[in-house]
Amino acid sequence: MNVSVAPSSVGLSQARPISVAVLAMGGQGGGVLVDWIVALAEQRGWFAQSTSVPGVAQRTGATIYYIEMIAPDASRPGRHPVLSLMPAPGKVDIVIGAELMEAGRAILRGLVSPDRTLLIGSSHRSLAVIEKTAPGDGTADAAQVFDAANVAANRFIAFDMAEIADATGSVVSAVLFGALAGSGALPFTTEDFEATIRAAGVGVDASLRAFTAGRERTVTELKQDPKIKLAAKPPLAKRFPRLEPIGDVGYDALVARARLLPEESHGIVAAGMQRVVDFQDVAYGGEYLDRLEAMPRQATSLLQAFAKYLAVAMAYDDVIRVADLKTRAGRFERVRREVRAGDGQILAITEFFHPRIEEMAGLLPPWLGERLERSARLGKLIDRGRKLRTTAPSAFLLLYGVAGLRRFRRGTLRHAREMRHLDGWAQRIKKLAIADPAHAAAVCEARRLVGGYSDTHSRGETKFDKVMRASDRLAGRPDAAEWVQRLTKVALKDADGAELDGALRTVETLFEDA
Image (cartoon, rainbow, N blue to C red; front, top):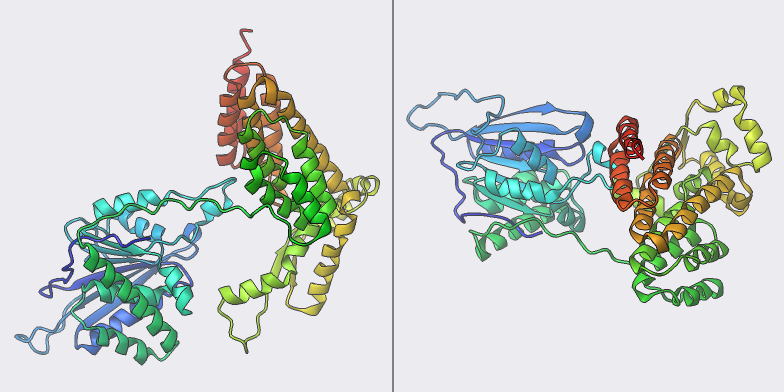
């Protein structure tokens, strides 16, 4: 992401207090950044004051920090200013967002004004709870924030500061401090900023590296074209693995089969094949190709969509899969990187499990699992939730043993149900592929509704089944594909299913006069 800026001269007037608002989430170092700014001003003999209003819920502890600072009045020695405790809309000189949507939140609150405010923000995304829990892709459109910032702010500086923080082994607050220094908004030298970091005495070397990188990036972009205002970076193109042999006889045989499919589908087929083989084994990858090869090939786009959602359906999230993912060595390494645990530090990971009786019965053969599902007493015993520390040997071995049940997965109740459900969906697509390819594609895309684990999977599957029944009812109508797409979109956004039920009643009215 390039920097978006306006004039190169960003220095602010010192005749009145300089006001700074910082918006950050927990773990982004917002408090540290504020402490640095206050210490920077005070070390230069200025009066400075900071306050904060913590938040919760959708932004996972998002906090608004506010700073006011002013140079002492030489004509009135000994006089102390009265500084404000809260930012006032239209009267904030500098707004710093530790993440793109935090910058957007500042705009919505009126803290950013076109005649006054320098807006500095990291362009990376930390998804809100509502974005993570939405079925399908619930990610908000970052381009809207960029468009709004380019209108609302007097000057706008934004680039991926989290990427720089990771590269320098620091946190985003240090890069933001560097961007603030590089903007020239405050009447302090680079040496003053660096001295502030050194005086704090914590993570000095890494913080200085991140500070310098952020300052240099800002200065460089300001020099290139101080008047340019860029739009948001276009989304990255999807990268698919290559469909090529890896040296395993069984897998390489699958690759040879997959290459007989249309070339345009090779990327998504390679990704899907890797997913299902990782989920089960090479033979399961063969079943994946069996289903793809049985699909009519009138439209390559339909085959590509089917290859994608078929892989997701075959690699469903059961207890075995969850245990496997939680005990992989790569996961522990990733968590250590994310929390920045040192070589000598002990990492403890606690897992929160709440399996239902359906998940536990799903591990058993169908005849036995169906009997146990009907046991209210056993269901009450299981439905209590568990906490397991996977970094402890006992809990790790327990989950590792459950993951080892993968070899028996094909004989479980859960697998039988998933395959029966999958086959019904695939048969619908095959039936529609020749007569109405658009309708077939809509049915294929509706599989987005099914995913997740436990209650999430159950709710998604229920909504999917309702859409499929409506699809069968709509078959033969010229607008069938449009209706299925509409129902899928409603279901994705509808948490409790009420809106979907209303849309389904509308579908029924189409046949009242028939």
